Amino acid sequence: MNVKKFSDAMSELDKKYIDEALNYKKKAKRPVWVKWGAIAACLCLMVVVTVTLFLQNEVVTPVDVKTPIIGNVGIPSVGEDDVLDVMYVHDISQNFTGEFAADMHRPEGFHNNIGSVLAIKISIAEDVDCRFSVIIQLPDEVTLKQLVDSVNVKNNQTNYIDIMDAMAVDVGEGILTDKYYFTLSASQIIALADSGARCYYVGSGQGDYRDQNWDTKEGINTYCEIHGDMYVFNNDKNKISHFPDLITD
Image (cartoon, rainbow, N blue to C red):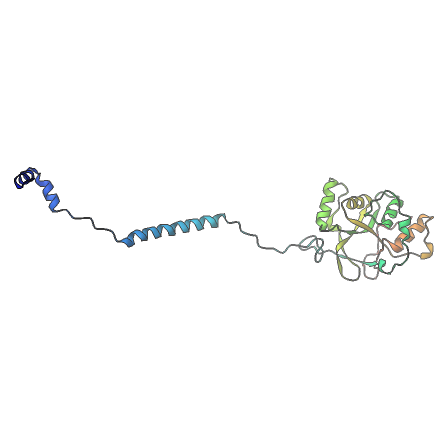
């Protein structure tokens, strides 16, 4: 394009466009730090939102609250403020060297978890409502509450066992952590034995050795009260004087 043609072309342009071209100013470029600052702000916002959502959905571990100990560990209790009374008992098996006669006279048909003397006492009882002094030994890794609840559920609350009737057992060396004292009916004892508990008769510790025999009910009762299932009451420490299991007729 020669000078003449260029001049003619320029004369054809609208003056408005020429003025805009002469007054044109390039947009100011934003500093780099503005761009990175905006990115950083977005990242911070994302972190805050993420942490907030996490805390809202976090599963908080409950504080370890002290609970009453029932069963195999510690001082037996059945409620936060219900420490059991104590039944003091002699364990005469430590000094017993002879053959246990009750095993030879054990009646048939009783669960092996029921002591021989207890089985004998149940078999000769005439009153179906008779209750027997019994030490219950818990199955391994089972608490008293678990055992009693299981028995009550199995029996549909028939012959209900009240855990509040339990007493702790002391044989002279402190509280036993796996044994409890109850006065129970025959059906309750059988239900406990079926659930894995071992049941032992606690004799009164009273009677004349000369009256023991296996020919009369009185002689058998005398043997059972003197020996029990190797457990007899410590009458020097216990404050109770009435043993509801003792058959006198």
